[in-house]
Length: 125
Image 1 (cartoon, rainbow, N blue to C red):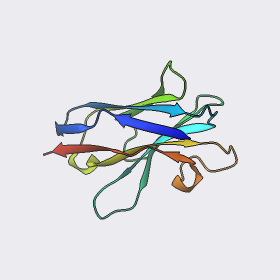
Image 2: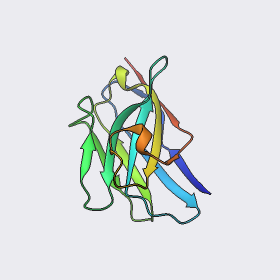
Image 3: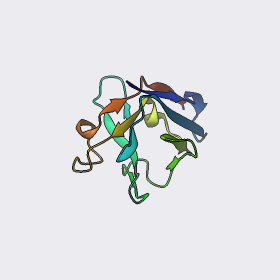
Image 4: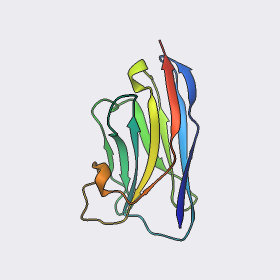
């Protein structure tokens, strides 16, 4: 069994920064990509950022482009999300996810196989 564990969420003022971490444990697996999604109260889960294991390509939602940076850690199957210039509309539960099938679309949550439990990010105005 694979577990993804997020950390680093919290409460921050608008304009501030947070760094989320996601570490995989359990059964060894080889992801095609790992990414971050978020879900605000009363809304669906939306794509935030993803990183391809094949070539290191990164993908971002337009709403976070230029403010968030996804990166790969030195430890196996670890990713980070550096979030700068945070806005109140960034408030959500942030989920880490891993995708196995290279044919599935990287920005769609349906393409991911493993999910973390989520970490709350709250940005106050």
